[in-house]
Length: 384
Ligand SMILES: Cc1ncc(COP(=O)(O)O)c(C=O)c1O
Image 1 (tube, protein in one colour):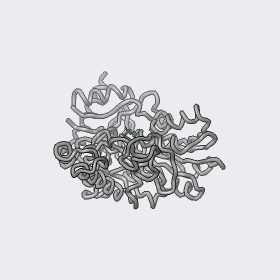
Image 2 (cartoon, protein in one colour):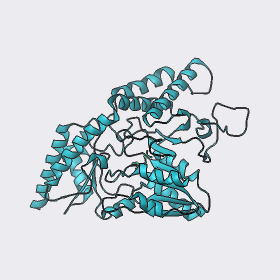
Image 3 (tube, protein in one colour):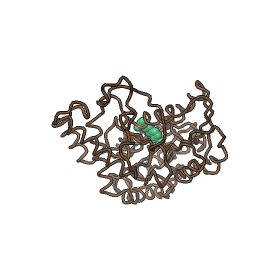
Image 4 (tube, helix red, strand yellow):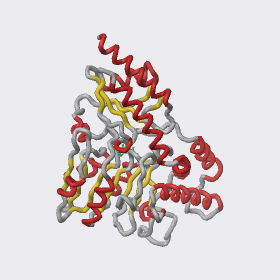
């Protein structure tokens, strides 16, 4: 099996991730931060270590400002719904995943939040000035994805962040596509809140994700409950991470995520980026010669987090993906990718796209095999 669906969730994970999850489950999976016995302390220490490792990856100076969630969607919902109130205005882009668009649209429909959406060009590129032009006196949030999950296009997050910082507007970044292979520096990029999944580029297991909230940015926590701290109080503690981390954590998952992040740190983000860029370039160069195929992604890795998006002139994207799976054992994703406005910008709302998303464990041989499979499919289409 050739796995080219890393934008949905990465596979495989580093060996150490499997090992440490199993070790945690077998040896020290007590409730972290609760009971005060040695095993509980050990679990708490492992969670803190994961918090530290991920923080250092994103240049977060105070790891206590990073809370764990079950995925990026949860982190994004907390960030969006916890910060906006009726009468506030938010700006986002037309390249967002539904996990940004839907909470914002829900707030607009049900809670009187105003929303502006800045559309991209036909590659999904966004101009920061267009965001600046939408700012109103009541703008409280700018939310932008680091990179599109449809075609991998990287957004000018640093520049958008500078505009937000200049106007005192909270800036939320969805790091779902790119975290682990695109440098994210919350200081340099003026990021106030960063939502990320643990199970994609950070190489952790499913059921993990997180949210960083800059000190001084206040958001209402959506959930209250047990934290193992301030147990004498009937109110939620106000200090981080407990303020936003109620209930028993996914300790084995977080441990695995920490080891995924640590693998990335030792491999080096720049090295991962460089390696993925070779694969992305090779795929583009191979596909560009296929007569039937049209590419919707860019081969320049500085503009692409690791996705090749294409469709064939006379074939539905689901059919191609299904053939790749059944005949060639290549796992891809087809159709619409939970980002309807992005498909609208790219002009692929009807046909959908085949998405080939590479990870750091794919090989050049796998890429070449995929190119020849697509060539074969194209020849079949032309015959019929
Ligand atoms: C850009 C983007 N944002 C958010 C998400 C949601 O991530 P999760 O499935 O971890 O909630 C995804 C998932 O594919 C994504 O690609």
